[in-house]
Length: 242
Image (cartoon, rainbow, N blue to C red; front, side, top):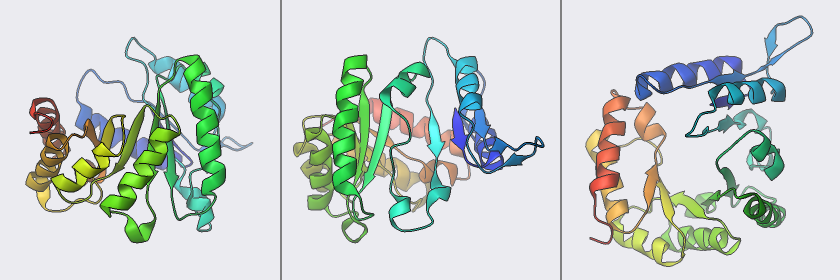
């Protein structure tokens, strides 16, 4: 399920995702907002989102991908902000909740408090929480800062933490050792081709990561489907801690 302020972005991502996913995967899109004349403008329509989610619901649940990038009119506005509640996620039949905190963008104390409260709410509703915890831009891949950010997510109660790949297996081990919850490694910008992408995934999982969350490394590839298949093989065949 793709949600964006822009109808064109949502439909474009849906088209690309369908090519990658192949047959048998339902992907919906709810982008933009209809004005009084029926024309699509930038915005978000909660009713359309809920209707689309309901149309996709099955035994496996629905994965919701939301784009709020157009909110970046200032440095602090690029920070992820509370927009919905745990009750909203439950009403939309979500299987889990994902929250991002990017340190260095401002508002971190408020967001950490809000994340802790949201995790408490989700726990009472049986919804696991993935916390994407990213260090400040000037230390974006530094192992100590990545581990620190991941630790904060864990201590706030997140069930899973997503954070950056630090460049080598030893650094990933340091991040994993700093927490007691599964670590999902982000891929960052595409670099070095498919072989590099698979090698990064292999190193991360071998160092103890529970998995990877690669975006640009997949959709910027010439053959995204083969990259996804390769990542699946790597994640499920690589022995952790080896």
